[in-house]
Amino acid sequence: MTPNTTIAATTTTTVAPRQPALVQGLSALSFADASSGWRIDPVEYDAIERTTDGGRTWVKQQPIPRNGTSLNGVLAIDAQHAFALVYSGRDDLIGTLERAADGTHWSATRGRGLPASLAGVSFADRVHAWGLTEFGDLVTTADGGDTWRPMRSPVHDTVAGSVCLAAPGVGWAATASAVYRSDDDGSTWREQARIPVRGDGPELVCRGPHVAFASFGAGAGQHIGAFLRSDDGGAHWRPLTEDRVPGSPAITAPGFPESQERGYPVVMLHDGTLVFAAGCYACGLGQSWLVVASPTDHFVVTKFDASDLQSDFVAAAAADARRLYVEIQSISADGSGPRPVTLYASVDGGVSWRARG
Figure (cartoon, helix red, strand yellow):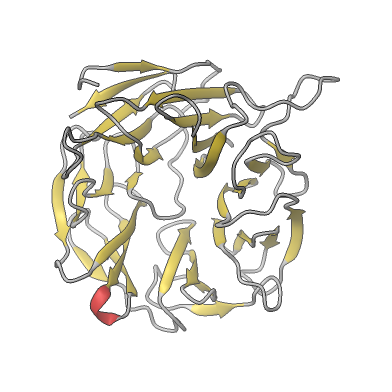
């Protein structure tokens, strides 16, 4: 695939107007707006990089020492503020939450009150976040990670696998079998959805009243498929695999075969647009998909086919409902590395894509 390649989606939909960028969990790629973003160096994985031109060029900002240290993910809050989670192999994989407040310089947050190292974090804005430690503790901060306090677990002796903060004090936690909501910063929880098809590694994305949950092994044609979503604060849930036409039987979403691989949610946007990644393990050379799903179940499905020139997703991100980004890693001719990565961008909600850089 050449840098000038344009990729067209397999379906089309009405694209929502531009909305504020979502602030949630960390990943390998994150955009605050159409220009500003951060990523983990996708080839060497040894630095945080920043772009100010929509991903056309990247500048290394925060190198990490080659001593077992690793970057877990980055998160763009706005053009000046970002977070990153760094693990140190010398200290038994102790994680440190680092912060940039001027777009350039990074420093470690104090992390006071953490009972264990952070394994994941979800932000509602630059100061309010929920975290999940390596031992399953739920924690909350109101000062950008300098001070944390513990939250109650939704279920006694059950560890949450994912948290998502939709607004200060309001969010969700997921176990392998259920989704829970708290409206008082984790003091109390109530069960909102049971997951009849259990799976490893539950993952949540949310924004305001919109939330989606992913957990399954393989196959989108289950009773409850790859994803459940709610657009009314968790009062009602439905699988993304249902057919919205009245009186018709449930079907999988456009282009989703029974051999669909387990996907993961990328982001939930302000208007309820859900972006998620998936794939197919029985589609010839294999396919990586990025799917844009509206609250009314209109889908845009982009299929990146594996070939001699490209392999799989490295990461995906969204600045808003129109501006989406995907990193695809190439395959070296001899199978060795480093394997170059190409960033593809869409400015029309995933209908078409063009390589940048």
